[in-house]
Image 1 (cartoon, rainbow, N blue to C red):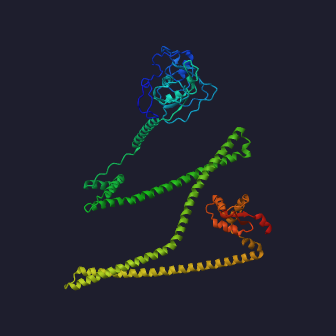
Image 2: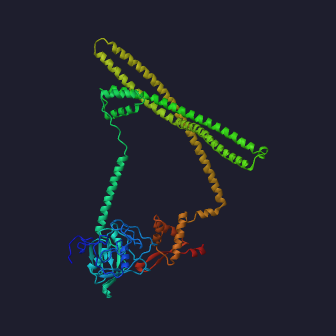
Image 3: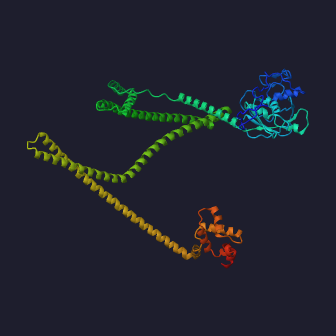
Length: 613
């Protein structure tokens, strides 16, 4: 048998099957076989369960009722619904489907089916993309030729690796062939007609994990992922909204067109978008500033139109609400009249003259009308409540806003007045400097003053006078606001003093109550002076007592703290030792050991301390 150094799926070297290149799958076009067949029906059943055409020795079909389109005989149910050529894993076999396993006769061996009462052989979890099977329980005298002879019926064999310990690994061309090979698990194999132990065995077929299978499966998954990403990208591109039309570049001609569009209400939105794009691009310069200003001005003229349209729509909405309320109230009045008719008809004078069917119909109609009337009445009341809530919310918001703004307005006004006063002073200084500079220029130039300078001086003097008057007014307002702030501060101080007096009175009253309670209940004082200061310490005492009660020979402080750290990591060893030393009637410390093994141990003595106390 020739060996090739091809790359194996399990090791660097492998035994390639002599029939790997021309492996034959038993299908309709198979060549004639020279296999001994003692039981034609059993052979046909086994081949039908493997999904292959049952053929005779000369290659003719054994049974005439075999359907090649279905891959099975109509009279015998198949073991699995998979067909040759499908590269998918079939669904599991239903438990209620009858499984027929018969004796399989091969050229050099015979396969005997397992006991049908035994449970099916166990298999491991199927690896992804598995095309390799593990075959155990082979006869000791079994050769690779016999393995190929048995398993080539399941499909094309790519490679076989046989071990010396009666097992091998077989790699098939497709994944569905592995399921066919698993069908042979549990069969007893016998070489020829020998009954020697070395010529018999029980096959165990299971999934095997191979690097090549995993690599091919990962490549396939990556390809599917690429196709899915491409499909999603194409779908996103298809569903993406079209981009807006490009905006033309600025020119005098385009500017005149946009200016005309801005004046038209129907083309205003398009023209405004163009104007915005131009401004963001930086088309505004000294030459085109006037054109842009005129376009901005025409855009501003639409503000009043939009406000008027909004007011008109709000008015229409209010009118529609009023019409709806009026119509609803009219409908309610008519419902009331109809209900009144039903009630009057239900009175004794008229009710006795109606038949039973008529009375029943009138009562049903009355109930229906009352229900509809109640629904419409609730709807009308809800509308009125919403209007009242809107009115009350507006009033509450106004009152809260006024209260909040009254206090902050004073502070903000004073700060604004201060800033304004400072700015006015700076402006006055600037004006004075300008006047002085003008006077110096007049003194230097020994000529008559121009009428323009005189006018400028007059204007500056008038401005100075106006600024001085304004400054005086601002100072007066500033003084008035400061006086108001001082009053508010005085009021706050008085309120704080009153609160302090009230707190002192409350503290005095609490002290008197405490002193009375101390005089009435002296036992509480003694309890408060106990060594346990908090509930946490009481819990620690209980836990430590339980722990030491379980350890009658005592325990070290480190052992106790290691137990407590399981409950709370924040417990400190020094705090625990201080607490236990305070409770002398509950815990006691003793020295145990001799020499180097001398150790301090704490013991629980609560029962003895109870007698002493």
